[in-house]
Amino acid sequence: MLNKLSKEKLSFLKNVALNLRIDSITATTASRSGHPTSCMSAADIVAAIFFNFLKYDLNNSDNPNNDRFILSKGHAIPVVYAAYKQLGVISDQELLNLRKFDSNLEGHPTPRFKYNEAATGSLGQGLAVGLGMAINAKKDDLSYKTFVLMGDGELAEGSIWEAAQIAAYYKIDNLIGIVDCNRLGQSGESIEDHHIDSLVRKFESFGWCAIAINGHDITQIFDALSIAYKQKNQPIVLVAKTYKGYGLKDIQDKNGYHGKPFDKKELDVIIKDLKDFFESDIDKDFVQAKYVPELPDSIEVGENYKKQNTTINLTQDIDSNLFDKNKSIATRKAFGYALAALGRQSKNIIAIDGDVKNSTYTEIFEKEFPEQFIQCFIAEQSMVGIATGLQARGKIPFAATFGCFFSRAYDQIRMAGIGRNALRLVGSHCGVSIGQDGPSQMALEDIAMFAAIPDSIILYPSDGVSTYKLTELMANYHDGISYLRTSRPDSQVLYDKNEEFKIGGCKILKQSKNDQACIIAAGITVDQALKAYEELKKQNIFVSVIDLYSVKPLDVNTIKEVAKKSGNRIITVEDHYIQGGIGQIVASNLINSFINIEILAVTKLPRSGSPEELMAFEQIDSKNIIKKVLEKK
Image (cartoon, rainbow, N blue to C red; front, top):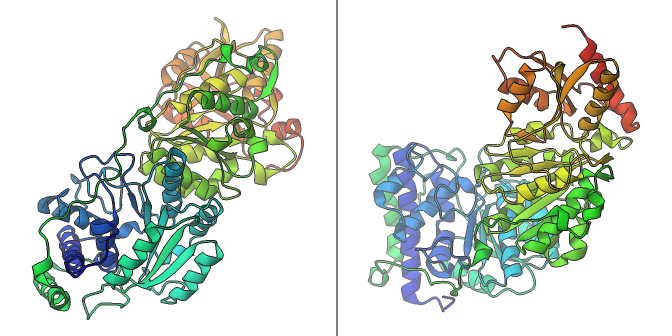
């Protein structure tokens, strides 16, 4: 490793690159789909990384000190699968099953193949994920490097440059970026074409060390990677000039071949053409039969690298008095205290902020644990990407911002869902109840967004105690993305500090034998539902009230039982747009149950105003709940 490029090694790497091209073409032809020409431009780069520089224990993909390789240009994944075939991880037949339903070798990288570090394929995301992994190595004092192979087309994405500036800000020198600048996108030329000097200057302006190389010259690739591996105090990127379809003269560097596999009938001719193009430059006497990567530094795998449950106790918390019954505390602030409590129990807890720490109250955590806090500034896409990389390496990241700003990073959230990453995302300032800041700051679509992610959970606390307990549940949910929806205004503490909560549960706050309707509320509207209950009670009209703190998964059985005892009538009330919100989630789960469901939700474009004015305007306050209950059905 990092030795000189001998004549023997040069011939070996050239032969590897040739075989990577052949295997990529063969696999995509067998599947009748894929991107062989994109694989061919990257083959020399992949050969050098995987067959000289990558320190990796192939028998233990979970080794925390393995070097990491992320293919940001995910459509070129066959060339990576081909590398693992040459390393003996994948058989010939498995490679030919590429993209088939029963194969783990999917058309773009997913963790179904355990050597894939992240789900990629939506371009522009790999650098932030790699940055998260590189930051993890710094925090745990590990020696591994993180390689991220990007395409030049995805450099048009702003998310790349978000990650680039954050990496430079933190001087992340164990992150090695490589740009496969093959000039051609899907439909035409990339934004910089083959002007790699322009890309070098861009990266340099963001604080990176950047080196321009010929991406088909093994010697240049080897020398540049040798420099990158020893890099200190700043991230480094190799900008490699390459050609799509390199090695096949009739298609090389020509438009119209993106995502088009070759026909089986022409396969023999294509392979012969490739061999004719490359083999004259390969000394067969120096081609070794098998290569085994150098093992990383040995490290004992401890609790730091396992899915870890963390327990906190509100009754013993140093800030317990703030959660006394009938006191008032905003759920966003209660989250900050709960996060700090988790930090006292585990160094794996990481808080990630997007320049709103004094609004989400992650500043409480930062003050106590500055070394476990990451400031991403106003770069929400990178915030989620970094969280993804950290979580993949065993951390428990909590990324917090205004709930509405997660819409900027929804593609990153979607891809983390595909990658089965257990992100903990916290959105504050939800709904019209934030008041005077107006609609641009109001999260009114967030429940719909997160509900659509497979295996996600959505938790929506109504008071300080439930916030504290639900934050603990999030920390211990390892099966997908969890989202905590917090509110800006102070709310009265409803629950005793010993109250138990569970994912997929709800709380029956009010119930009698004479209930005419069941009011289902969550978060800020629970207080409005309880006010409505008291006013109706004065009129000798009784309703049941449910605090739906777990929006997804939904406690369908409890809701049905209570509704059937409440005149088979449900009224949902929420501070969220009606589309995709709580009402529609309840209705879809209770379809064909013969229960009448009415929805009070945000249905008009809000404006600036007081919380009280806005909730009345949207008809989700106590007066409108009462009005709805009194309507004859």
